[in-house]
Image (cartoon, rainbow, N blue to C red; front, side):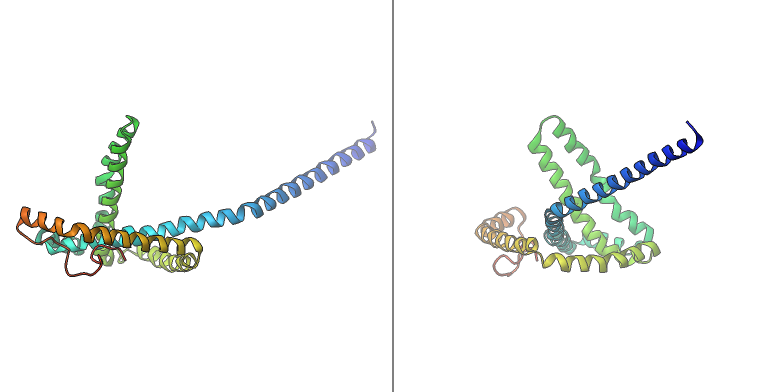
Length: 231
C-alpha cells in the first residue's frame, strides 16, 4: 500500500469515527432530553412533596418542640441553664448546639442494635424518641445561642445566605398543591388532637393534682385546645 492510499484510508476511518461519535452524542442527548421530559413532572412533584414535608416538619416539629421547652423555663433550674447558654461565647455556643446530637447518638446506635435483633417496635419507638428529643433540644438551644453564633463570621455569612434562599423556596412551595393539601391535613389533625385533649384534660389534670398537689402545668384558659395545637 502506497503512502497516498494509507493516508486516504486513515482519513476515511477517522471520518467514520467522527461521524459515529457525533451520532452517538446526538443519540445520547436526545435520549436524555426525552427521559427528562418524561421524568420532569414526577420529579418536580416529588421534590415539592419532600420540600413541603420539610416545612411541615419545621412547623409541626421544630417550632412546637422549641416552644414546649421554652415553657420549661418557668422552672428555676431550667431558667438558670438557659441564662448560662445565652451567655456562652461564640464557639462554645456552637459546641452547645452540637451537643444534643452527640449525647443522643448512643441511643440511636442502641436502636439499630434492637432493629438488628428484630425488636422492631422497641427500635422504632427509641429512634423516634431520640429524634424528637434531639430536635427539641437543638431548636431551643439555637434560639438561645443565636446571638452568639452570629458573631462567627462564616456562620453569619452562611445564615444570611441561606435564609433569603429558604424564604424564596418556601414561597414557591406554599403555592404548590402538596403544601395546600398538607395544610388541610394539618388543620384536620389539629382539630382531632384538640378534641381528644379536651376529653382527657380533666382526668389528666386531676391525676396531676393528686400526685403533685399542683395544677397541671402549661394548661391555662386557652380555648379549643390552642394550648397544645402547633401553630
